Length: 338
Image (cartoon, rainbow, N blue to C red; front, side, top):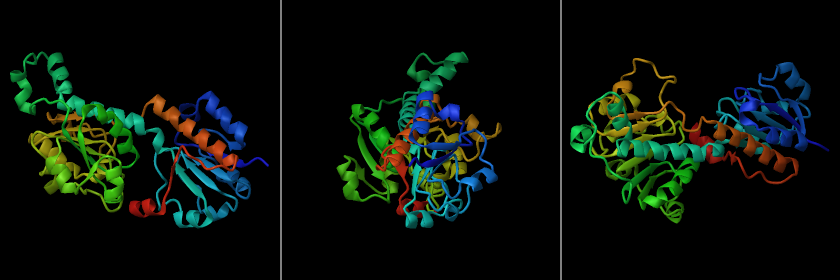
């Protein structure tokens, strides 16, 4: 018997995340209900609550999972797991309901831009471009280099990663050609595991104080809000580059802004406390910062990857096989998020 599946991706749009081929794969694998860009009305949901086995959603807004007695999987297309406040994970784990996130679809693109931002800052690409366009001195190192620190290559440098989840694992191969030493702070992974990945486990203060380039890749949680506070930011070397990629939640952003305005170190930033960022936010005038408008993963290729991993895993679920493409929620990770 074919599985009954609700396709309710809002806020995502079907045509944005699914190619024609991947959308066809969904309909070939199961009986698809709703399948529109607008959120599924409550009445339509109620009518299917007794039969539905899989719900594909842009965010959990479907209430108590107890109302879906046959539910076996939730496939999230927004980019992260539903919050514990919106979804009862205890009930999901107890019932064997898989909660799957499309986050792996974004990893390669985010990692690639992270490398680009690091290079733009380390090699002064952004500043040279700005000076060139504005008719400012930019033809020799002595004309502007000392104001924003000496340019440097990534070859052989000490790299620090804060967090070693999927994003960090996508970034690490991109750093391999540079022959960098990589040290990692991730309190949710054992030292043995990290060493077997070819990286060196260290504490957070060591990452900040000794790395030439620091990538913030940690998933936001109840325990790491503003983890990198002013005192820790002040440990960063004056010649270092601080790359903020995952969420600004992890950093005291007001302190980061003040230190960048003071020229304490350099940074490349893709995420902000409020988005869009206010036009008068002082970070916009920070000469020592390369700014990106939260676009690391927000591109057509990455969004189409979402549809691909969803179609891959729905095919597996409908064939009573183990889904492999998306990220499976683990009790420890959900506890971490709080």
